[in-house]
Amino acid sequence: MTRTCSRPLRLLPSLCIAQLLLALACRPANRQSARPASYDPAHDIGALFSDVQLSGIFSDSKEFVDARPRALPGAIQARYDSARRAPGFVLRTFVEQNFVLPQPSGDGYHTVASQGMVAHINALWPVLTRRPDSTDPNSSLIPLPESYVVPGGRFREIYYWDSYFTMQGLVKSGHTDLVKNMLDNFAHLIRTVGHIPNGNRTYYLTRSQPPYFAAMVALYAGATDTGQALPYLDALEKEHAFWMNGADQLKPGQFYRRVVRMPEGVVLNRYWDDSDEPRPESYRPDVEIGMTLPDSLRASFYRNVRASAESGWDFSSRWMRDPKDLRTLETTELLPVDLNSLLYNAERVIAALRTFRKGPGDEEVARRFTQLADRRRDAIQNLMYEPARGFFYDVRWRTGERVLDRPSLAAAAPLYFGIATPDQGVRTAARLEAEFLKPGGFVTTNFTSGQQWDAPNGWPPLEWLTIEGVRRYRRDDLADKAATRWLNLINRTYRATGRMMEKYDVVNPNRKAGGGEYPTQDGFGWTNGVALALCAMPSHARTCKN
Image (cartoon, rainbow, N blue to C red):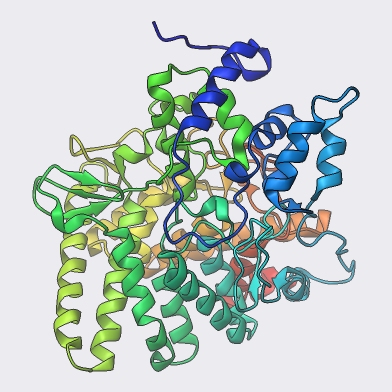
């Protein structure tokens, strides 16, 4: 009989903990072959890693994986194996002696009381900008060759999808040189790693994030000229190949990694992760929940946790069969409407750049990517749109059913990228206004699950997608109303706290946003970018100056 443990980790008998740690230690590391020769904390320091992460000496598991070893990891591991048996051994003291602990990004910066929000954001760009990294094999940081902007707080590295929304503000404030640097960094990651990871840390290498690279390239081309986008064409195509890996070998009904071939023959995408272990940066909470599951379900749970992290929406009732139970995550079973909208956009951008370049073979490749985009657009319009409800939904790929009980702001993606038909766009916008527009802006979902990507929270990237998405379908009135509410909320919060926050409570603007695995962070890259982009519009200039 399989022995299971059904209580939170802190109450579990030591036998159950030992069983899990032994199982994790005996499993393959799932390292990618292209992995840079850098420190991988979950696999390079032996039992010290799990002992520290499960001990609770750090309230945030990310702090230890971002810590830099003061010596070779193998030497620290050997030192630990010897020292921990000595009388009076203190784990926290050992860690502080052998690791340099990280500081929050932007720590020590103080708001200038007289600055308005826009001036504050512009003053923050240098604070959140990191210079090119030096190679350090004793760091979990993957070095990048050019400067880049980080979100802030606990997020001390570049993040993939955050960067698109940060770039919106960088363009408006005249920092196109920094946008180019960040694009160069992402192209570098695609060349050296094979994809753009969640962030430039070794523990993120098994997954990506929502693929906004094509949208970033298009944004940069719009801010400069189309010719400036051509150097990124090879990287765009290589990233597309990463997301489509295995598609050519699939028959209808088959799936592999991030691709599923539907019975109709069209290939659509899902979120995935190449590892089924607890996330190193969230190790303790993952293990605590994993220990409440039977052994046979634990690996699937960890993979779904990681796939949810790849989505950027970690976590949301959107991914859960039971919105109150994180153990019911089914992310890998879903075809997300926003992910497939992003890949449609990538296919269109690649086709457009091939057409613009007009080199040998470009016309044929452009035609192929146009056909891929057209097939994906048709699938989104027909498989993911529910005519009776006038809204876009994720789809369970095994059955083809739309997840009708989980409506979310992901439905705005087909509007933002121009996929929806005119009728679909108008009807979706009407539902977004009726059900999702709140006093502080658009709410992510209408479920109050306690997860951070649910009600009552509103998030800058989704505000931008939804505001500009409905605007594309001639709902300028709704776009301006939502933008005004959002800007009023973040401006009021800034004046009260001197901070730009990662997320906001849009249902009750007088309440601080919450939920999730960590406290609400300030800084904050994508909030700054979206705020500047909206403030640059004449209709919102007065709101931003008040």
